Image (tube, rainbow, N blue to C red; front, side, top):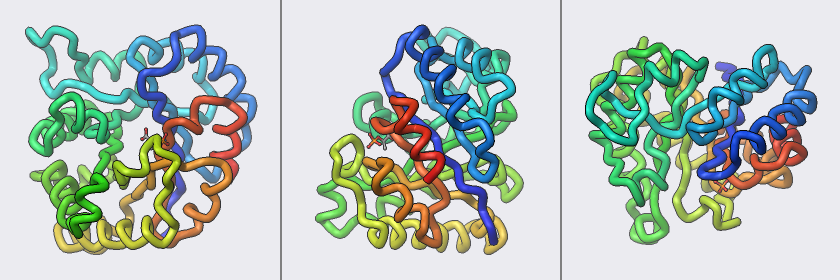
Length: 250
Ligand code: PEP
């Protein structure tokens, strides 16, 4: 089964609109002509409309980093899928570990968000991953399985076509400590096995699973060479156009 690699940047809470547009102008020229890899940038809400406009006609897609599950309502400070869709956002990153750690994201809220994003016709990038304590406590597989199955609860095989998973060990995010290709591959293969059990072999084999956690131009190639690693979700190294270019041209 050949799965198109998917490299997505996650800017977190970095870049004003002018900074985002300057990045987009530079990055779209650098990545023009790349057709064997899907490319996206996950940006702060305030950047999204300008990014969509600047990147129109390029091969860089735009992702939000969160959303609310309701269509509208009295939810001060929240953003709905419909609001993202209308401005041309194509994907939503759901349940990033920073959302779990600082903003109370759970499998239950992630599941509601995943369903809302899919109902709105956008793509989901769903994150899962263990903390250092969980890894050292031998709980990696249990935690990852719980994140994946809990967040995908109630989905159909058809729904999964618009879902990409991102395995992001929390101990490797923003720390410079990348999981070794073998460590990452072990968990990716495990996740694919979990998906196979729940959704069947065809759906599991078609699902793309990104790795995230200190991916850089100098380690991306080796990671992308592993059998079950289908792309990357990248924070720090996706903030500069030259580094972003190196990632997508691994
Ligand atoms: C992330 O933000 O999802 C991430 C993996 O960050 P970094 O690449 O900086 O570790």
